[in-house]
Amino acid sequence: MAFVYHNSRRSVLSLIGAFMAASMAAAQLSSTFYDSSCPGVLSTIQTAVQSAVNQEARMGASLLRLHFHDCFVNGCDGSVLLDDTASFMGEKTAPPNNNSIRGFDVVDAIKSQVEALCPQVVSCADVLAVAARDAVVALGGPSWTVLLGRRDATTASFNTASSDLPSPLLDLSALITAFSNKGLSTTDLVALSGGHTIGQARCVTFRNRIYNENNISPSFATSTQGNCPSTAGDGDDILSPLDVQSPTAFDNFYFQGLVNQTGLLHSDQQLFNGGSTDSQVSTYSTDMAGFFNDFAAAMVNMGNISPLTGSDGEIRINCRTTN
Picture 1 (cartoon, rainbow, N blue to C red):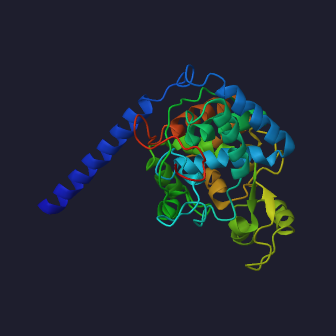
Picture 2: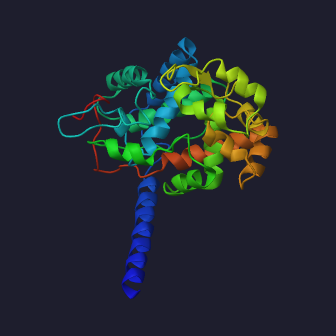
């Protein structure tokens, strides 16, 4: 028993040390990081994101999701953007990302403009963080001050992407654990889930919910079934909006949908299913300003997950490959 206790204590201390290291790295980020080295970068990214969203509103959700999927895998380090190489299998083809994450061409275009402005100064990880904010704003959502100074990873992890990205099939307790493992609170979990007020999901991710779950509006289930066949393999990639009321507007209708049992994903509806997060969902469903404030704060918290700073990592010239 003493041996078990010793190992448990060491694990706790290691976990505390990891969080302290992540906090110290996050503390090195600054909203003024590029003020001298690349003063035009924020306006350049904002203009490019606005143009991309004007061309396709769904791209706003895609850019937001890229930042999330980057940060949840070994921290906000741009690793999600790396293509596979002979030495590592990247994150793009991991099950949570394969045929799902998108927007790489837009990121490439933004990075090219940034490189022309300030060669090898601004990281791909920071481009993702700023683009996510600007995408939300472009669709009517809140703004926040993005802390900058992240550097880019020189490797990526297929296995970590497969294990650490929260599945749309998770129950509430598993969702809380997945976010807690990244240093994010339950309040952050619910607020960040509100990002599903924009974007779409593939039939394969919600088929079981609309055909087999009971905590779902019958009329919503029926209407959604019309766009998602019950047979596995049929129409797996057919898309449905995560927020059927206003799929291209960043608002609080996602939470109103949860109250009305029209959450598209199992993991969405888990936030309002008789559990500890019901009250937060109820509040957001009637208080959009409160949701916006908490979402902005949660995005800053998420952007602080284990960034590479100082001399760690590199500033990639091409976001798809290491230098």
